[in-house]
Image 1 (cartoon, helix red, strand yellow):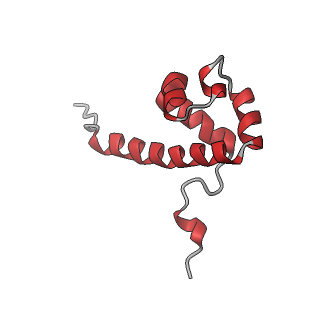
Image 2 (cartoon, rainbow, N blue to C red):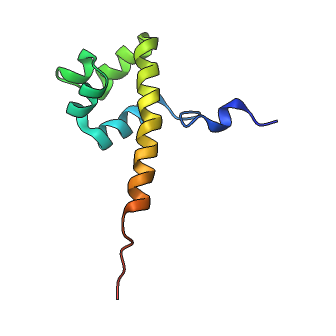
Length: 87
């Protein structure tokens, strides 16, 4: 039997790694638009955001959901990116 976590893209990934990936991919401004919480919109930092997310289950769920979407978007970009060919 396959574990239900086998298909979970956030399984084994720390909240800090998820947040760092999201900030690198979207940037703070777009992240704050996608998940409208003040710690992403007003003077955002990884540390302050982690503190909030660890205390706020609904916000953490939104981050985990967006992380899954981010991974899919990154895979699409990689698939559509032409291979670098050197001669």
